[in-house]
Image 1 (cartoon, rainbow, N blue to C red):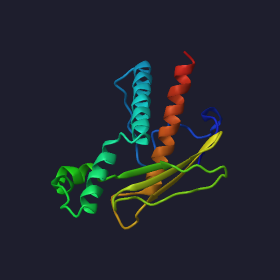
Image 2 (tube, one colour):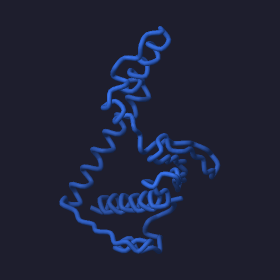
Image 3 (spheres, rainbow, N blue to C red):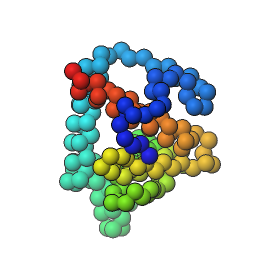
Amino acid sequence: MCQGDPESQTTNQQSNTLDDGTKRVQFTIYSQERIKELFDLAVQRQTKEMNDNINGYGIDNHLMGLRYAAQEAGEPIPDIFTDQAYKIVNHFALSTSQVTSKNDAIIGYGPVVPDGYGCAYNLRSNAIIFSVSAFHSDGRTNATRFAQTLKQSLWDMADMLNRANQR
């Protein structure tokens, strides 16, 4: 669970050594102002995508409808669904969803592909509760490392937003 104010955290966010002893290399080719601009653009794009999907305008909704219509009509499944490109773009290595609960509950689900992650989140007034999952049998995934990276990314974003608000 990530909670509270980054200023009150006792961990050193600037450390270049991770908990497992590996080194982290960080460099930036953009100014802090440009990073904030790009972040804002990404939020706008994600919000548009989310709203499009909620309102039934996501491309996957139309394709799913096409597939079900063909199945219900007893027609062969259209070739697009067996195309390699379609299989690649529908390999969701990261499956995320907000699972809202008024309780401090950890609610989760598994990944949707063997080499993927499930990442459910519960937004609270002063925290976000995450549930990260991956299959142990797949050597390409590591839920612990994913959770650590997610946590560090959230602290990095909080730091960036705090710096932007101080200007």
